[in-house]
Length: 248
Ligand code: AMP
Image 1 (cartoon, protein in one colour):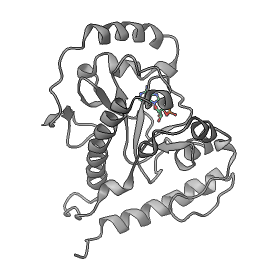
Image 2: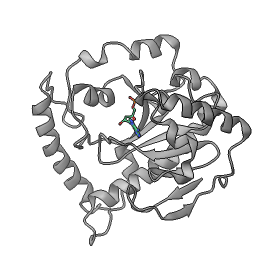
Image 3: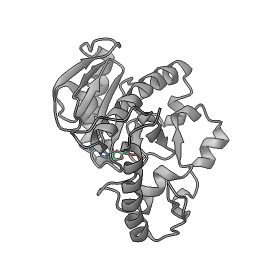
Image 4: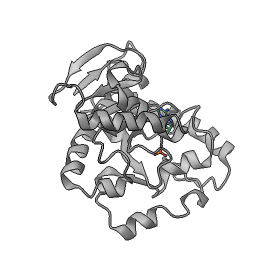
């Protein structure tokens, strides 16, 4: 896995060669899938993730890639740190997550990859929250990172969210954005494989429910502006708690 950057999202320094394999040119199968992906991409924005799969080395939003995965910054991040893991397997790319994750070997590989990115996202969160001149407290920063999928994804290409818990972002604009990460509609990768009944249940009526604060559990019902204001307060308190030195 080739990983770019210490300060993602913006610096494009290729810095860390992780233990996984070095990226090699895509196989014929992958190339064929990429041609097909290009055609579809022009059709609508739901195919927007295909552009990263096509030629990850050239794309400025790509944080890392291997033969199996491409990892990008979410273009409309819904929290302080928000990445997407895109599997490159052409046989999996266009499947619903529940279907793709029935392949135990694939799911295992994806979980391994996700745990690496969860740790990197935790480090990035620490760097984002801690003032530059102070030292970063030695805590489990990755506890603040969630990894999972939306039961009904809006984008066509298979992807897994790696996202910090805060929901503090200008791109968080309405109830669906919030509830899609804070109700059972968001399925943690560790919960897979799901039964068919469970997967179906997780798709239902999620957006109709009340908005509950992820931190204090206060119910904001349908009042998005009030929640948005509250998230600002929660963010500041959460940050203050995380950046204070750890007592050992
Ligand atoms: P979902 O399909 O609901 O699981 O989420 C799709 C995610 O893709 C959202 O978090 C979007 O912000 C993100 N997104 C949409 N278009 C793009 C794009 N062109 N590049 C990167 N991320 C995108």
